[in-house]
Length: 246
Image 1: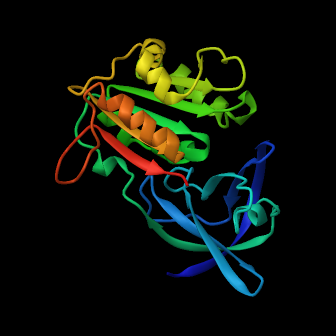
Image 2: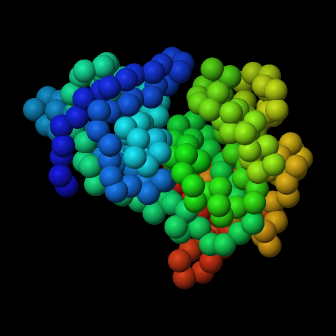
């Protein structure tokens, strides 16, 4: 592990307990979907935690963070502002990338909370638009204020209307325009998510990337398995790839 000192270049607050931090360095080489370790020296010891990169290749490194009650590192990161220092392990890690997705016509990106981060990095690149004829991004949150990056996602929707669909999901408030109210697994089971995206979840055409909290991941995998979409493994190709945010 090679720690590099960095500074916060920009801090954006999306809602209470939800921020983006942009660093004054660019991690490279880096594959969209990978993560890096951040560190702070707290109480005489360096505390570290992994965070997915939300920026595109070649851009200043950006992280999408939610406050974790009782967490060792994240609450301290929330106290940082522009110019404050932190440590970065500039060696990106992880296999939740398009390189490990088998050939498919349609790609579903299904996230809860800050699990949106790696999908933002993918959508800022060229490979995803080149490989898949239809792309659906479904982002589940509790409240409307937690739908971060919605302006960017709406812009992709307008610019690539024939290829890209954004379906926001909210559990505690009324659904926004183009979105739904409810949890990911139930909306898969009922068929509402497919209906809103105007695209079927079919094993013959589809690969699904799931990123978020463990409960969503396990329940969504069960709902997808009922449709014949099973977990993808290197030695046993399937239709669903998973990244846990816990």
